[in-house]
Image 1 (cartoon, rainbow, N blue to C red):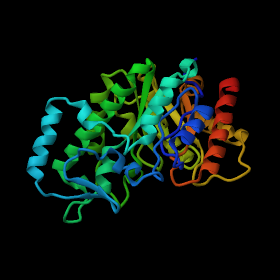
Image 2 (image 1 turned 90 degrees about the vertical axis):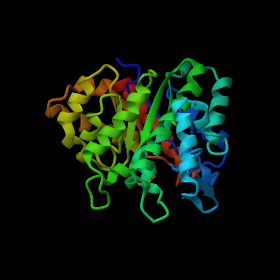
Image 3 (image 1 turned 90 degrees about the horizontal axis):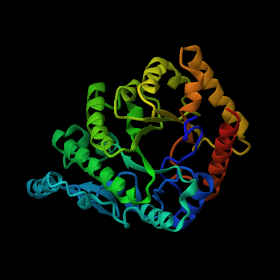
Image 4 (image 1 turned 180 degrees about the horizontal axis):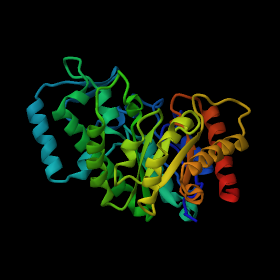
Length: 346
């Protein structure tokens, strides 16, 4: 049995304003794969995009949020690429003002008996989500500026490498998720990116990180073309909203079969506990029945049932940053119950 089978983790954001309260929840309910919490309600700098914007040229953050300013663009790009060429990972660190949860998580790990910790989970915003969220001085998303998209891609790689180096001291293998909610729009009239661009750029990102001996996952909380991700050789984990999009995900059975068979460390993370759609009275048995339904469907399409069970992680369907602490506690308590039942029964 895989050491990861049925274990639970989180996607990233939590609604707490106090990092220690968020960490109490994490270590209580996801002790085997704890993660550092993103806390967007604590500070505007902890928003999903702003959090990773430090030292990216021409980006400024103020009370109104993150903005683009092309003044002195060439000189700023020159400084940026000097750091890239010199491989100055520390230049791209994520400071405590931008990620209090990350730094308090590190401190908590230093003070915690880590015997139950199997993996440490980190996360980074994906380049498509980041670049789509910021507009240049003419009102066009950086996603369509090839120069700045490459800047974003390089910066995200370096910020991911910094996290890997930062948490390496604890001697635990690291899981790093790339969060790409924007790709939930893929194929719609709202996005003009093509499949080849997604695969090529995410391949570049993941190949840079894979050499560091980490498990790399991608999370998309909407519906998308999941075959894009199964085609990325360096990806190890595909994370999806199993509560809201189970039927859509099942359409990619052949691609998922090929993905799981390509390596020993390939997993599917079932985001089975709903976040925005969470309702009182939801019970673990119902959510487990949904997972069984999905596994049975995939098995009928030719996937090995035992393999699916062995390569199964669970999580909330998405981040919880817009909710409230009381609801987040209920969601994670339910997640813990689902995980425990899977570990014992499936």
